[in-house]
Image 1 (cartoon, rainbow, N blue to C red):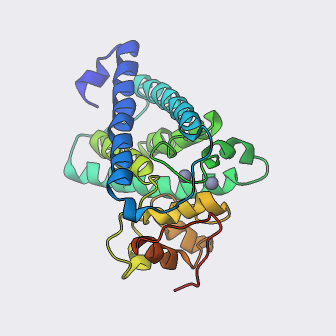
Image 2 (cartoon, helix red, strand yellow):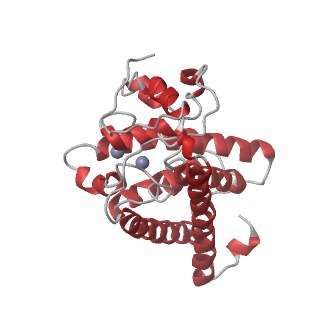
Length: 261
Ligand SMILES: [Zn+2]
Ligand SMILES: [Zn+2]
């Protein structure tokens, strides 16, 4: 861990965490809105936002940031995480391991959040039926706490298998947060549908998760379609709908379907 963090007092550490998580939010949210503005012909849903949507999403983001800053201040100040020497190998492996574990963990968490017992905590995120760059981090306090297990708890546990790389962990958090915020924009960035199902093993088009918000009962994966494909929760018509959006024909209803292509 860098000296600036190791030597910081508790309030200083909290301020640094606020700068990290708040800074990433303030950096990525305008990117998402700029993409929506710059690419109107790539709009995903031509459906109006809910009344007061930006307002409740902003509140959700504040909740998420408070939980993230508190969690990371506590975890880093505890000295419990075992960090190894910085090296390309250690940080690269850390990035890969944290990324893979987050995707597996998130899929399980997300399925659980749709269970009757927990769905009341997940409804906050789903109040956004059409998504915006503020939707990604808009969630209930309980769900935000559960995200922290993926962000911090699993890397902490992993560090007892082998010391982790600080920069690999940090880099993954930056990718995760950027992808989560920008990836909820109501716009599609994919260049070509050719081979898209294969490519989605690594990263989903934005339409993919937009359909989760519209339809609720499938597409629980984070970042990539892999977990949905393994567990049979992928809709077959998303490549056809993606093509529609890319042809400049936004989806006009949350219920829109297509023949699987
Ligand atoms: Zn959901
Ligand atoms: Zn979402």
